[in-house]
Image (cartoon, rainbow, N blue to C red; front, top):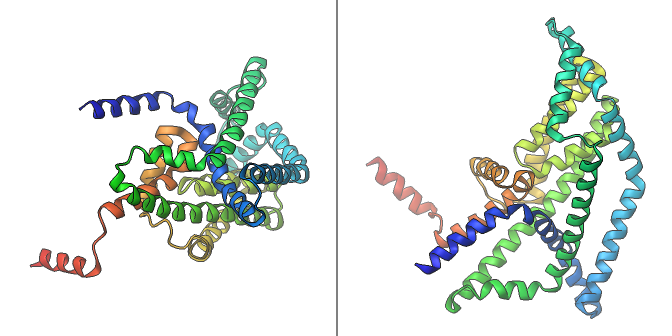
Length: 339
């Protein structure tokens, strides 16, 4: 009884401080991505783990810095231009829709209402106090993310041993087996997602820049690529955003962006995903939607990001605890139901 009460109190406490977890979760993701490289360097060179971590993190920071150096100015310029022309984009969009569907609308008033609603939802970044608080909090979260990711790698064995102490001795080999299976699933999923982000960014940029000649194609393509992280809702948001901005620039012809994105999604779902991710994450579409909605409800955007890996890990545990029916058992069950 005391154990269950303690568990409930712990769960309640963790829920109350849930806003503290994002930098640690992101740090864990970074550690998970870099750990194989640290291990490889440690094994191949015989360096101590701390020196291997230092080298890999320096290479990681250098890679990020080079990416920012080459693409940062262009990205910042397009983001700034997109934000500064937000009123023009919305008014052009409304004018195009009004002319195409012959529907009278007060463009200026509707534009002001839409922009006011958007600015109220995201806050006023121009306010000094708001900007200062946002900057200080972001820097603190960044520091926690980096430090936690380093400690997750350095003390990975101790972290595993800490959680294993709560598992009965006779069942620890089962827990280790389950962790191995979850690690296999998650590693394939993370690797596949990174490849999909890169490919979708490239395809979206090519479609928007080469075919439709849109301004801000780079930032829209990058946004479309990162929306791949969010199953179901992400591609819909990316397609809608690209189409809306396209209509504001080239008119009703921008609706052709929708079939282009759909074709890219079909190629991804039926050609690329089976080859890259394979069948590592065997989740029913309804389970995917349910997991994403639960993640968004509990932790917002970050919850949507980690919903599928968590759901896949839960499925590994359920499949181990309650093995799925074999083909023969399924046929016997169906036959018994028919008789």
